[in-house]
Length: 101
Picture 1: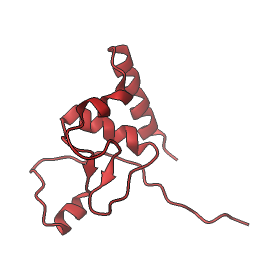
Picture 2 (picture 1 turned 90 degrees about the vertical axis):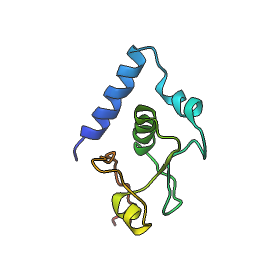
Picture 3 (picture 1 turned 120 degrees about the horizontal axis):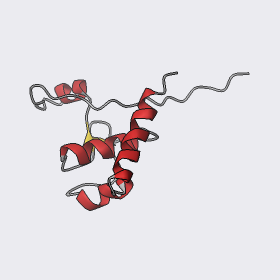
């Protein structure tokens, strides 16, 4: 398993702390509409695990007005527009696996 995404999140948090920010309070300050927790707009499911601080950081860095997200395919399926050149935010897929016996 690659730990690259965890290292990236850790490094971003450390950089914000060194700059005097408290990164985990930022979503509450900038939220303009909707809830505080990142949510998939197409499915209504909240994001979990390491994806929460990743998406909070992206919302803060890019000035997103809400914490609702879509995959590129979901946006196309919903006939939504995606700005040319827009890049996605990497995340981590969490899947439940049945217990091995």
